[in-house]
Image (tube, rainbow, N blue to C red; front, top):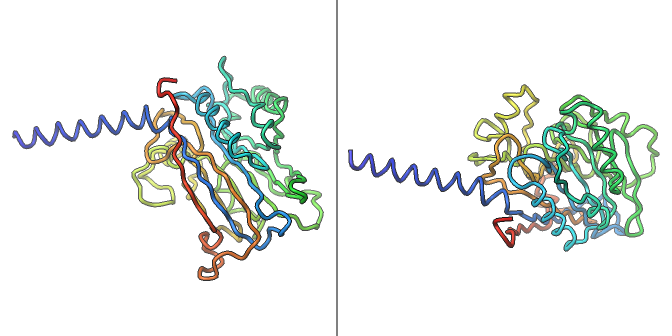
Length: 316
């Protein structure tokens, strides 16, 4: 019995430590992921194009989402990308709160584009439009089943933005309606990576998405979502479609898909093995690694670095 009691006390201590870390430390620790992607469709004139990406901001959710957003913006200010993309879920359950981030800081860094997420429709269309107007007034261009040609670094990039797929609003046909046949590197921005399974073949060079929070609390060794991931259960309980793409690079129907961890939390104010993320993509003209098949995502990964950034003051 004494051995059992010792193991029980040790196990309870480890569980308590893990819970404290998941609630107090990891949600305040940003991971900066820098991915260098080599693709033949990137023209030499746009070699070195840098794109910043954040998603799932969840203002008003558990923890300190506004603090996390301001820290993420500070990271983007240091990185100075050419474009910034936002993957939706700006307010937790779509509800405005008294303390809000300074959204205009993003557009002051670089042209900024965003799409809605499922949380942005939680409070009804009137509140949704209020949030969309707020972001638009802050200099953020919202793409809701539409596309935009952006002149950057002496070249042109096409950004396709899909409305939220979880509320049945994503419409690729409307988003691409009227586009010319002129070739431009194409980036597709969507809240959830599961739409990649339903898009036309090679619909974009790069698809960026969020939604899964990197599982938020994960004990799974796999890159695809499953019952060992807390976020899988959050979607399962709600009856939402279950995305197979948890975090990282995938090759889906001729496009490179990246799923980020997002910044905020929902339902549970915890993160474990899924820290808040700021992503920086550097696009290169090239063919990738010839040693890997075309449908392997790592073929296009020319470089990768992850840096953990802790807040200066854990109490703020």
